[in-house]
Length: 378
Ligand code: COA
Image (cartoon, rainbow, N blue to C red; front, side, top):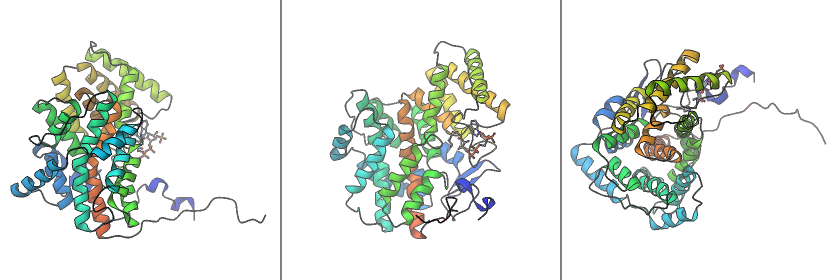
């Protein structure tokens, strides 16, 4: 096999069909089941989008009422899972808590060894309902705070924020969070979704596939980038009383220096989109609203400075993690909680792909070209 036949990182390789989402890098568009993600973010709740990803159609009012009731009934943190989380160190990465939680919920599920389409749909909804309590409680316990019980009079996003902060948030904040959850929900054959499909292709169970996907998402070249963006902001230094212009100038200088040292700056670039990430304008609009709401123009300065300097030097555009990171920071999430929020959202896309893979399965098993020592004798 020659080098040219090897597709390092599977770049450009089309491995299967999917009807879940369509990414078109030429037109910077992303469709979930045919609907532009921007339209979904403007008009839908995250619950409606989850239903769409799993069922292929948006719910009717009756279907939404039934689905919502089901989701609200599954929000409380399982006491057995809480005890396991409490036994884990407070300095364990929150993604390790999420990964453990997915695995525990799988082992404790009444349909654990059943991978029928009905069982998988049940498991997907259960995970979707349960994960916010895990993420919220984990952030709270790190601050020595008690668990906040879910409220079934609140939608998914409002309740997620309620369980994290113990205070009801204003509609602008809930809307921005809802937009981020919709934008993070699905993105075709990205690394973690592909991981979930590989695990599913062995006829393993849904929770095993999601647990593996969480491991893949943790890395900074994938979901971990939203945390890394905040580390960049912290390294440059966030100065609450600084003007937008001064913050932008410092950020530009930081970026020029980082690029001179050939550093990879997280939150920029994308394997598929080479002219900009289709989700960024919608998320940036949500960030702008949060910057105005919390009165923090200096964050916009840092954002603009980095973006401009990267564009001038390498014409590399921001990806979704770039505006999402500071948005979550403004809302009060701890930086290590950012990627677990992504998990709570992406559970929808992963499980839609797991069900699609199960319905038309073929073991995923590529080949490799051997480049070790030739056969020899001892
Ligand atoms: N900062 C600096 N340079 C970057 C860069 C970044 N974030 N992203 C890409 N580049 C540069 C590379 O250094 C490379 O330059 P070279 O040709 O001079 O060596 C060129 O752009 C191509 O990058 P490459 O890493 O080969 O592209 P890819 O398609 O394999 O990678 C990513 C895509 C996402 C892995 C890459 O852009 C990256 O590492 N970004 C940062 C992590 C991140 O934000 N991930 C979240 C993705 S949603």
